[in-house]
Length: 261
Image 1 (cartoon, rainbow, N blue to C red):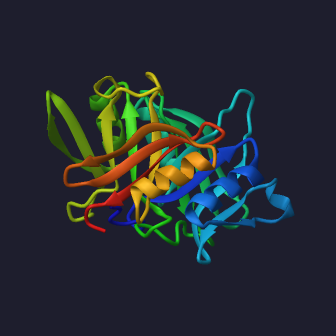
Image 2: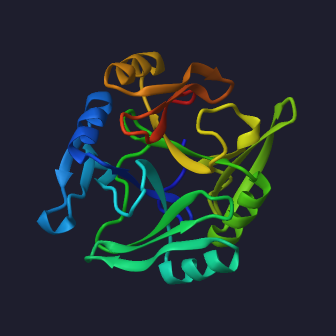
């Protein structure tokens, strides 16, 4: 489960890009009980997804030719401009440079050397996620990557992450990662794509895990609402019970009933 959204390098924002904001909000509302709140007429259709009045994510229409529906993970930074320079120095790509989002904060988007997109958030008026680790909110994030070693080196250099490699048997390695100074805690994992069998193919990508009270019930409900099941409900030793989907517009995500919940 997430250990901190307050430390630099930790997850502190989660955005969904989708071709139909209203339909996507209805899907996740039906699955997790989220409500959509518009960010205002000047926000271009963007808004917040809230659970019991607390922000669990943001959502907005797709921008850019050829963009596909996806969740974008944002990591906290104290200086978005310095992070952009670090990304380039470490071999990453700046997709959109640091820019002010009204008075809410400063954001920048990047692509890591293995092809996975992510972003950073430098908070000002808006700090970030207001609910994590509880049912209906994010409790873990995971990177499927074409090069685990390169990904660990990159994020360690750019965001100062610390990590632990955990043998999974059969030669598989799962790396848990988290911000420096987190007391050994973690917010996510890194797994090399060749070690798993997913319809996603060989594209590096981050995706979120949302905590649920009952994984099997969530799987049934997601399917009823139009999701495509990628990984049926399964137990992961010491982690919990999980399942993975594509939402009705193709954005990958997972649900998790944590063993420690």
